[in-house]
Length: 297
Image: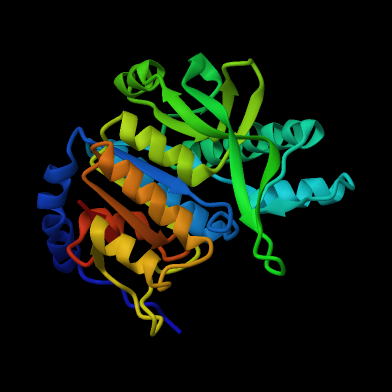
C-alpha cells in the first residue's frame, strides 16, 4: 500500500500552526522522563530522538531523564541475581546497586546519547553523582501485610530519595547548547551510591530548574477515569481526589505524587503521556491536541 504524503502547502501550514507553541517554549526548560518500557521499540526511540533534537534546535532547553527497570531486570537475570520488590521499588543491595549504576549510567545512558547524536543533536550523558548534581537520602518505605493488615517498615537497601539538587552543572551544560541526558543514580551525604526512581528524579530536576513542562513518558495513554477513558486535564486538587477515591491506584500513584511535587516546586505543568505514540513529545508541546493528561496547579 502506497503511503500518501501531504502536499507542500499542507506541510507548510502544519509548520506555521506550530509557531505559537514554539514561541511559548522558546528558551524554556522542558524536562522529559523517558521510561524503560517506552525505550523498547527502535522506531519509537528514533522518533523520540528526532523530537528532542528538533526542540533543542528551535530554542527549547530539553533535559532528558531516563529509567531502565526492564533493562536492569534483564541484566540481573543474566548474572543470576534475584530481584525483590517492596512497595513497587526494587530492593537494592550492595551487589545490585553496582549493576544498577552500570546499566543506567553506562549502557542505557550512552545508548540514548547515541540516538540523539545520530539525529544531529549534541548530547552529554551524566548522572546525579556528577558535580554532586543530586544528593540523595536513604528511602524508607512502609508496606501493609495483606493477611494481618499490619504495617511494617522495609529496608530497601541503597534506594534513595532526592534531597538536594545543585543546578550549576545543568546550567553550564544548557548554556553550552548541549542536551543533558541524566541517569537517576545519586550520591548520598555518606558517599554511598543510591538508586533513585526515575520519575522522582525527573520531578526533582524539573522543580530545581523551574521547568516550563515536565513530561513523563510511560506505557499508558495518561491518567484514566474509572471507565478507562483518558482524562485530558487535571488540577492538583483533582489528582488528590482521584487518589482518595481509588480511581488512581498502583504504580500511577507515585507518578501523580511526582507531578504534584513538581508543580509545588514551580513547574508550570506536568504531562503523563504514552511514549510509544509516534512523536508524542512534539504532539504534546507543538500542537493544540496534546497527547496525554496535563496536570496544572
